[in-house]
Length: 283
Image (cartoon, rainbow, N blue to C red; front, side):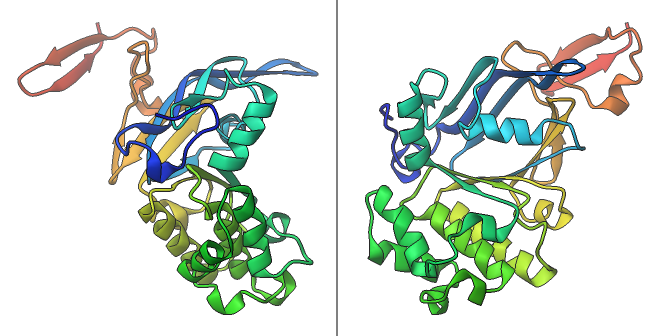
């Protein structure tokens, strides 16, 4: 079982959720009043999945990723990584857990790197904090196609190479989750393909990769797509099938095109046990 300092993804029970959000709520105060950036999100993601979080501007993508990444605290609800509740940790415990179990990749490649360190030095710097060393760092560079760049500085590398290096830094030492905010936004098609290859490789190592994106190229390559609308999970698409989500209170979030047929917000729901199907009708 995971303790308060956390354990690596590969040590966890693969059937247990790596990310679990329960009734997650985040309210901000603004000049115009209270803003509910995240509204009662219930979300479960298993080990080794690549997941894209999508939605229009203002839908809550960045706020949700900050909560999952332990960079912000929820107003209510809970978020757990590898079975450890972030809400119940002290500030110091949360920082140690983030260092061990979580990694972040920013949109601009150079924002992830230190200009005066070589590619290998970048990875080793993180590896040592996670209890591994140079050998594991070289293996990670090799796994992401950067072995020949080990002695290069960031400004001697392309944008796509820099971004793969950012994922190598994040993945060394087997964290549970890598969170990436628009990691392909500034990359061309070829570089994006290489970064997505890297994400697939890391998922194969049972590292969960959570990506906020508007890039349709990413959506074609990930395992799941989580659609947010107005701070809530509208649907989850898995294996090309869009699914409604049932929250912990048993409520189902219907797509807007379906809700439009129920102007009074009431419906007759029936369950066919033999066919295992729901029917939603006007009362």
